Length: 215
Image 1 (cartoon, rainbow, N blue to C red):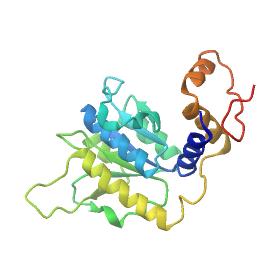
Image 2 (cartoon, rainbow, N blue to C red):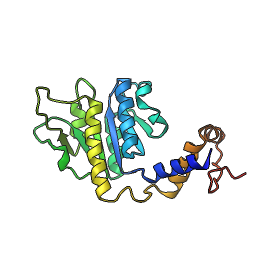
Image 3 (cartoon, rainbow, N blue to C red):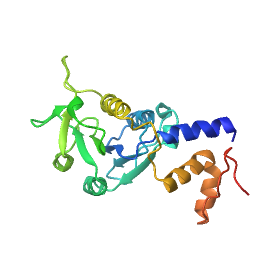
């Protein structure tokens, strides 16, 4: 760990958004999952969510550019459990879903706690998931095709959320609680050491102002 890298890690963590996230319902192609996580990292998402009927998610590919190291991914067994977990935390769920009630994705206020719900590559958001969403959003299409690839759609919507949050000043100061910030910073800076402490149920040590472990 160098002081320069430590400052870089802190700079990124300072801009993480705990109240913006994405929920992927059965997004099963590894390159799509990885691309969505790459976008999540780019817009400052702290934790992403996924639902897969097997209880797991596909293997990451190089598309992610290592994003899985920086965006925590919580896997849920069912869409109902995922939606309940997020709504209990005050999130509004916006499904990328072509429906009669859908509105232009730019009309949504993403400065409030927001979830972008994305469906499987071929079928989109399921009826079960759509019923749990608070609203549907669409990306207006001017060509022959009706929709974008799921990872491209995620990028379009999430960068609109980033634009709104930048204007609102939500990236101007750290927004994670102190303990989450400290824990995450240690895991980012010292992943091997963090695994060692977790395996033994030990608390993480403190870091000094240069990012070195205090012995």
